[in-house]
Amino acid sequence: MKRIPLLFALALLATGCSIYHPQAVDIPLLEVAGETRADVAVGVSSSVVPDAVTFNGTISHAFNDWLAGQAHLNGGTGHYYGQMAPGAYLSLGEKGVLEGYAGLGFGGSRTSSEKVSNDDGDTYTYAFHGHYKVPFVQANIGLRHLWIMELAFGMKVGAYMPSYSYTEFDSTGAVRPDASTLYRTASLLLEPQVQARIGGEHLKFTTRLSYCWLSDMDREGIFYGGPDNFIHDIITISMGLNYTF
Image (cartoon, rainbow, N blue to C red; front, side):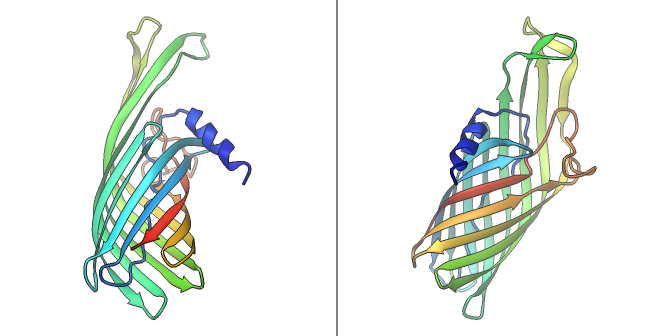
């Protein structure tokens, strides 16, 4: 636990051309009409070392005995993302819940560097920015009322549709020859998530772990760096509070 503040500090100082991170969206496990769950969390994302901190908020509501809806926003360290999704839920006995959502997400990221030296001793700076859309479906399953605990698993399947650019500049500020790259290749996105809550009837502490796989960038293995200066974060760990109304 003493290392957690250090990880957050490293992430705040790190930069990189990350074009996506697994999202820290709440798995609400709604079970009765009129129920609302509000979740706030801080997440740390990483490919090899932590490189992004985001502040996350999710609102989920059960409109009737089966219809649900969810909205999520997050941002921080050059990243932003939001999604909205209608869905449905079904109670499985006294403790189990099954949910399904279909929605659309939109996000982006940007960064710029201080002077960087290459192997030839030349110095340059770089800038990268862009955005993406993610139409998706997600299935959640979990257990509530396990004494003071809740456990959940979710799987998001979607299409990652990016539009990113990367450019390098020499010491005079001019664009370096052959040093501009566009990335617009769509990928299949798989994003599983596990979540645990502990606490009282209304207020609970929540922690979750999310993982991301993109078909184009990860086609040669988990640590494949992706095309021409672009990477994505593989995991996000988040901690926060969840309140049930």
